[in-house]
Image (cartoon, rainbow, N blue to C red; front, side):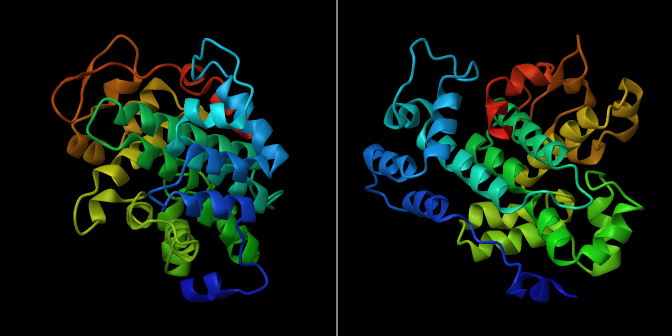
Amino acid sequence: MDLKTLIDHPSKLPTVPRVTQRVIASFGAEDVTVGEIAQLIEADPVLSAKLLRLANSSYFQVSRSIESVEDAIRILGLAMVRHLVLAGGLMGIYVNMPGIDMRQFWAHSLYTACTARWLAEHSAVNRDQVFALGLMHGIGQLHLHSVAPAATVALDQQVHVLSAERARSETNALGFNYLNVSAALATLWNFPQTLVEPLQYIANPLAAPHFSTVAATVHLSAWHARNLLLEGSAQDIHLHYPHDVGSRLGISASWVLPDTDAGAADGTPLPPIPQLHELTHGLDEILN
């Protein structure tokens, strides 16, 4: 099976929910209003309720109660709403995938997104772009498990789906990997090239024809999320830290260790990253 066959598989090609498609498509219109977006989202009661929970969560530190979808959009921002709608739509497509702990999988995606957003706030990287990439970068893994279960079962027995070696193992076995699938799906769904292009190089950002700070930031963030979920020790952090990528970004392993300072890409001090619950508290509503 090649990548084209995988994506062209008619019976298992994922369809983004209509509301999700319309909300995402609306962001390409320059004259779109908050009210118009609110009307689209209000057509989906579950999505509306989730946005209201998020807007009222501690993550956004709002001093008053947010009671309408329109107010929620103003609080969250249009870019964040697009990303959360995207995440909600994707989570609804793939459920109970054999061989994958789905809560762990989506937790990894969320932790990657939040970590990337935090790193972006300390550099010149677009925080909304890396947040979106963090949320959706693994979607190709789910599609692989859905369409090619025999191939993925064999791989699952050798390499954990969240392992740093997973992309390489898939490339060796199949000739492509889950990030290639993610990029192909993003193209199919008419996502902007600012998301499609970096997706393919998140596993190995140094292999890109032109170094992508965005892909490298998500790569580093995925490593951090993986380390947290798979319970790596401080010794593991130093041993397995992607020093080559970190060096290109100007970030050493000390950014994930307490009581130390690391350098940001522009040479300014980069404080140790907050504890995971501080990064995601409230935003983890998206997993429920």
